[in-house]
Structures are given as structure tokens and as C-alpha cells.
Image 1 (tube, rainbow, N blue to C red):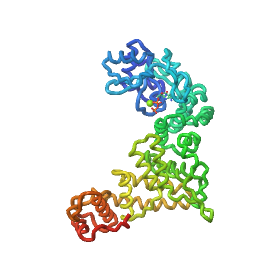
Image 2 (cartoon, rainbow, N blue to C red):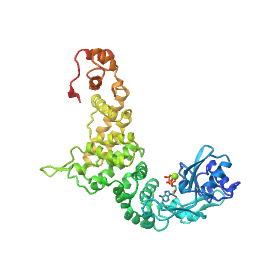
Image 3 (cartoon, rainbow, N blue to C red):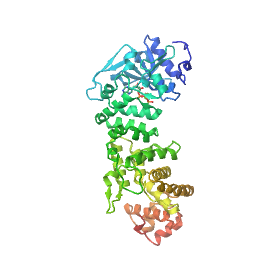
Length: 477
Ligand code: ATP
Ligand code: MG
């Protein structure tokens, strides 16, 4: 391929193509095929954002790609040969190479009935979802942009390639992809594309939950869940049907100025404000789902006031079911659900209250209490400023609690029984009991004695407590 005729910046690309991508293009073209970089890398380089991977599209069939790469000493994995995709590992960097293709009918709204390989890159670009994703780039030939993707990038618009109704009917996952790209880049969805997307949202019911989960996680991780909830209500409620009853749900409470759904969106936004846009993914998910059990736990008292008794615990359970359905990892689910479970947990700026909270968090998510306690406080802050103005006064109390948490954590308080200055063998020897569940119970009780400030975490003092007073009263939990 030789020297690039013009520099990448002449095309408005913020980055030069990585060396391994140059090499992959070169190998394919030296073997007589045509090849382009396409999709996410081109889109991101044009808008000045780094991209995690480079995709190549080529006139070579996958077997031809494989042969050309291997004869250049580049290993190839057959990662998606049914769709014409192989992954070449060029100088240690994986790069996906796919044959120009078009897709047949989508009778099930999610899988093309057939994939047909074609000779013209323009046909390949036409099957891609959005104009900003349908731009090809070649270091010598420059940009190939048959659908006005660069214009849409400059204008900040997500627009379907071709007829939007048909494109969303083909594959309903594109509905969520549109929301994810708009959220990530702060773009608007073009009017006709948007109308088609709302119409197609119920089609998400046909899509595998795991794929919905990946797209939703992508949306939530942009930190723009508030925007997604408010601007794309139909889509979010189609993706997570448990959100739908929250829309317009009047809380009938003097503490709430907003319905459950709007309150939730405000909590999502406030989490970003309190964390400078760097909220953890767990906090973002917890904010979105923290009140999901409000509709099913709603009661009205004799004075006409609404209550949601037990909604944090019920919400954690509902969130667990939702996130399991979306195939999220177990530890991720546990952290999200723990934040939801404790979002109304009362904390005071005292050593005892903070230690008790930390132990509860540690029991729910071993190893995560220190990180979770700050996230929990951010969730509480965000919740407080999203009710009525006087509820926001709680934020200054939470600031005092945060300072106390910092102080307390400096003292490295014991958070689990293994942090105690005595162990199971000490309990067995001192109380002359057999190994078994009773030993764990005694250690748990000792931990709560230490946490409650009744005894120091000192070996001699703990042994004396074991010998003397016997088990600490149950009332401590
Ligand atoms: P990301 O940065 O999220 O990876 P991306 O644009 O690279 O963004 P991918 O999901 O990796 O997104 O897909 C690569 C390209 O394949 C897209 O840019 C788009 O051109 C095309 N594509 C992916 N999924 C679809 C789909 N469901 N329908 C149509 N085209 C798609
Ligand atoms: Mg990609």
C-alpha cells in the first residue's frame, strides 16, 4: 500500500491508524483484495475520541483472509466464520476482519435468515445500522461516506441508514444501540429514526436478554441514564418492563415533588453531579433501580398519605431478578442490590453506626464495604436532593457522616470475623466446644461486641470476654 497519500488529519481524523491496522490492510491488499477500516474506529477518530478496537471489512472471503494473513506469519482465529469474520492477531493486537456482506430477511426480528457475501463495499456499508457507523476509511483512498455519516457526526445526529422502520424491524436490538450511541456521544436521534425506534421498541421482547443487558449496561455506564429514562421512556421500559409502573406513579407524600419515575431520573442525574460524572457502574444501576419496588409496595393510610414500606428490600430482590435475567456477573449484581437494599438505611456520624453499616455491607459483599459505603452515601445524597427542597437539608448531615466514615476507616475497624484478634481455635479451646456452626456464631457475636464499642479488638480482652460474660446478647443484631 506504501506511503499514505495524505495525512489522516486531512480527513478530519484525530488519530492515525494504529500500526497493526496498517499492516493488516497492507497484507490483504498485497494479496490482491480490497480492504477498509470501518465502523467504531472511524466514527471515534472523526470525533476525536479514542477507540478500543479497529474493524476491517474486505472483499476477501474469510478463507482468503486467513490464507493471506497466515502466509504473512499472522495468526488467525475463526471467531465468526458463519458471518465471514475472522480475528487476526497482528503484532499481538487482535483485529476483526469481515468479508463485505449483506443480510437477508429477518423473519424473527433478530437474526438474518442468511448472510450473503458481496463484492462492493458500498453494499456492506448499507447494511450497517447508523450513518455514523457506516463510514469507511482507507489511508490512501480516504473516507467513503455514502450516507452522510460525517455530516451527522458534525451535527450530533443518530440517523438510521436507509428506511428506519425497516431497519428496526429487521433487528430490534438497534433500538437500544441508537440510545446507547446517542447517550455516549450526547447526540440527538433524528426525528424519523426516533419515531421508528419508539414504534419498534416492543420488538425488544424477541431479543436475547443477555444482548439487551450488554446494551443497557453500555447506556448506564455512559452516566446518561437520566437522559435515557426521560428522552427514551418507551425504549427503557421495553428493555426493563419493571420500570413501566413507575412512570407517572404519584407518591402521595409530602416528601416527594415528583412521581417515582421522574424522581428516579433525577437521582441518576444527581449521582453524576455528586461524583463529577465518575459514578461507578454499580451506583449508576442502583440509582436507576433503587425505587423499582415502590409501585408494588404502595399503601395509602387513613389520612390519604402514601407509604412504601419495605421497598428497599423488595427493590433489591426485584433488581436481583432483573439483573440475573440480563445475565450480569454475580458480584456486580450483589454490589448493585446491596446499595438498593441499604439506600434508606439510617446512618449517624458515630463510630458505632458507621462500623455497623460497614459490617453489614461487608457481609453482603465481602471485600467491598469500603468502596460501597461511599457509593451508598452518594446514593443517599442524590436521593435527598431529588425529593422536595427541605429533604435536601439531609445532604449536609451526609457530609458530616462522610467525614466520620473517613475517620473511622483510618482506624481500620474489623469488618469481618477474620479481622478479630482471636480466631475459631481460640473459641473452641476457651469454651471447650466442638468445631461447627456454634463457633461461627460466637465469633459473630464477638465481632458485634467490638463493632458496638463494648470491647476493644485486643486478644487478651476478647479472650477474657469469652471466658467471662459468655455470648453477647442476641439483641445486638
Ligand atoms: P463500540 O465502540 O461500542 O464497539 P462500534 O460501532 O464498534 O461501537 P460494534 O457493536 O463493535 O459497534 O459494531 C461494529 C460495527 O458493526 C458498527 O459500527 C456497525 O457498523 C455494525 N453493526 C454492529 N451491530 C449492528 C447491528 N445490530 N445492525 C447493523 N449494524 C451493526
Ligand atoms: Mg466495536
